[in-house]
Every structure is written in C-alpha cells, then in structure tokens.
Image (cartoon, rainbow, N blue to C red):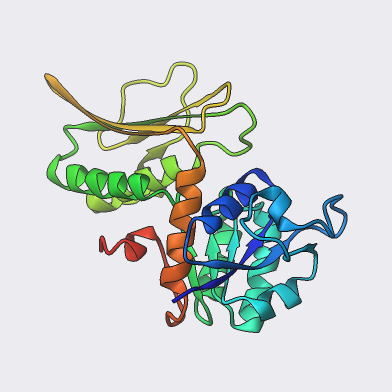
Length: 266
C-alpha cells in the first residue's frame, strides 16, 4: 500500500535526497514545498530528483497537507516548528529529521505529539539506530570505571554542535547507566580542567571538508578500550530511513516516536 508524502524544503540538500529516495520506494510524492521567495517555485519536482513529472514546487503548506498523509521535514528548527503547528492543526503526522532544537523546541514537539503522531530522530539512518542499540547495551554492561567519550566529525557547513546524533548517543549511554546527559555531559573542555569526573560523558566536535557524518563512542577502561563507530558516506541513508519512518507512521495513533520504534528495537 502506497503512502502519499509531502516533502518540506524539497530543493535543499536533504530535500533532493528525499525526492530521489521516494523514486525508489513504494511511496508517492503528493506535494513538494518551498518557501514563497524561492526561485524554484513553479518548477517541476522531477528536475530535483523525483521520478515523475506533474508535481510542482509550491509554498502552500495547507494544500500540501491536504494532499498528503505524512509530511517529512529536514529544514531548520524555526521552519520545522511552523510546519509542526500546521500539521497539528490539520491532524497530519510528521517525520522530523531536523536537528539543533533548543529545549523550547523539543517541548513544542512533545506537546504536538499529544494530538498527532510524530517521528522525531536526530538521525534517520538504519545503521545509526542499530549503533544506538549497541551503545545502550555496552553502557548498561560497563560501569563507570569505563569512561565514555563521543567524537563526531561533520562537514564545514554544519551549523550546530555537537551534532544531534552525537547528543542522542550520549543520552542513550546516560539513560542505560541510570542517569542523564544533563547531569553527566561535558560538551567542551578548555584550559586547566582538572582530573576527569567519574561517570562523565565527554564530547569532541570536529568540522572540516565534506564529511557527511562520522561518530565514535569510546568506552575507555583500565587496560582496554571499546569503540563503537558509524560512518556515513552518503545522505541517501538518512532519506531512506525517513521514508521508512513515513510509511510506518501513517495511521499510527498520536505519540512521540523515534527510529527505535520504527525499526522495532524497543
């Protein structure tokens, strides 16, 4: 059974990936959204990677939601929150792959999920979400004698740091140890920092070149070190995961879901 999908930011980097991935899936493109001031308004989505002609880029969010079953959004936090509000009003599900939300934005997403179904994940890659499960298992099995450090690297145009995926890895590791990232996270170090606090979860952020996304979680114990890594060589995996999430989400009851739910890992 096909799922009718609307894509927000259809001509952006991830939007084009989503259009290409849709072309290889059982889903169909119901609407392609762009800002009203975009030079691409009125162009055919086929020019940006979709398999068929006939879907023109439009700024009309209400019409897009009326034509579709699920909206997929990989834009920016402010745009995503506006789209989320429209989805909530229209009672339409949304898949959110946008990162960089502050606490207020995350709260808005959680509140909307009381009325509509939402898949919200900092990384839609199936491989990354399998990696999260491995991190959870390792953190549960290894006590605080094993220090946790998370190293991530992305391209030089990424605007948020640490990455949403790195933060999610930290959250998963902290929860598996019965604590929280807010309590144990060390997002940066500078100067004379003193000895490492037992149980802390440290982060190192690297930016450069065209790196799509590399993440490594290190469990460093006395005499041994365990490293769990995931490296992305294409954004296509994020797009394929998002479409998988959209198909899974259609018809689900209101609630806040993530890719662990989509993949049956919970």
